[in-house]
Image (cartoon, rainbow, N blue to C red):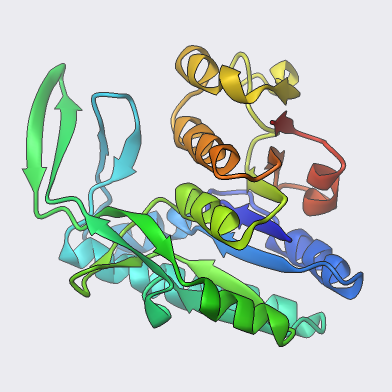
Length: 268
């Protein structure tokens, strides 16, 4: 069992990713795909006159500020255009893909954060009414039923709170929770960089191997921007029993197969 998270930044080669997934499925591998959509969401939000806003927590993690209007744009892009585009690409290759959000069947469920702390101009303040949370439960019965019957799940945020509200969740951590719940052996986190870079954005400074007990220190010393949350997801996956996490490059040819061959940053 492999869980693959595809980022939503500019430059992702979805055609190549879907081609690799189709090959794995033909070879009998069970695959779950999780995707983002941040770049397109930002573009649509700007076009609709509701520009994206991002906040940074005191621990240095960056996330999207999510009010109701932002969540509706998020759902339109993630659950609509991006999800169905990936499903279509897989179907064209003979893969019987099913696109679902974390809302559907309470696939991803968790607690919504009533209040978040953010740092602005060196000062900490509280934000309420931010529609974000964290995946705490995965509907494995739904996923295993699909997999058992030959479907490939294509999953995307948002998730659902215990009170039945849609909430934005981090896709990397949701993928990690999914990998743990399904007992996956590998979690691939593919984005628009080769992996963890020692000197970002110098791509020649790729860190090729990372032990699980090095994640926290390296996250503080080398990880920039969204890479910190990817490392947190990797840590959660390994702690939950996933054997390896590979941070790989979703640009260019054979992105999934190259990651499975150890090209990128192999953690664990």
